[in-house]
Length: 111
Length: 113
Figure 1 (cartoon, one colour):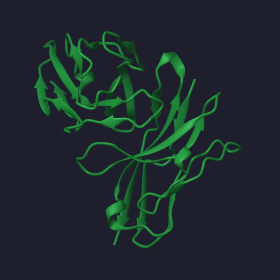
Figure 2 (cartoon, rainbow over the protein chains, first blue to last red):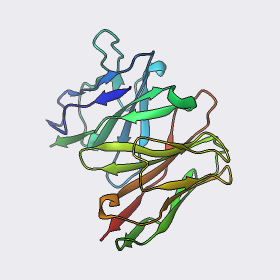
Figure 3 (cartoon, rainbow over the protein chains, first blue to last red):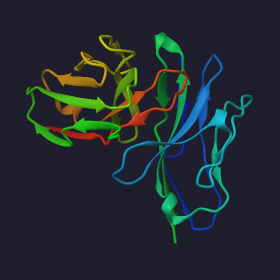
């Protein structure tokens, strides 16, 4: 079984402060991990995926297989980063790639 | 390209009524998905399809049925709506060619009274 855990429902930081959104996963195979973001009243969109090893909007995430974590980080939070963030894992169960989502973390950046 | 679209955007039903949610994508994607989003529970997969004419159950399929008669459309049906089905429903599609990025629709907000 695959599982994604996001321990924080809400994370509140001040503008300019560092941000770390935690994500831990459980999966027996080799996982593919993603971060999706949902801005207020908008659809979910892909923020980044671990295999791309890229930085999007200043966010990065490193897959740590030893700690089974894929935390999302940004050194300096901006007001426009306020959104709901979902960590997701892709597995090859059942013949079709499915995404298992965490429960999400609401990031609030205060001025 | 419109991407992934969903119809309707909002709907209010009475307990026991039925309805169908339509998802359409114009990206020629093979894989399509239906999720529900509830506070504190994230997104949970209801049903999915790996190609035209195929469907499969997800994590929370009870009370829902789906059909994929055409590649571009994925319908989600509620035969007898219950208040527990009050949720925001998202459709998503994926190319199925090794790229795992799912593209989401704007969502349908359903309230069952």
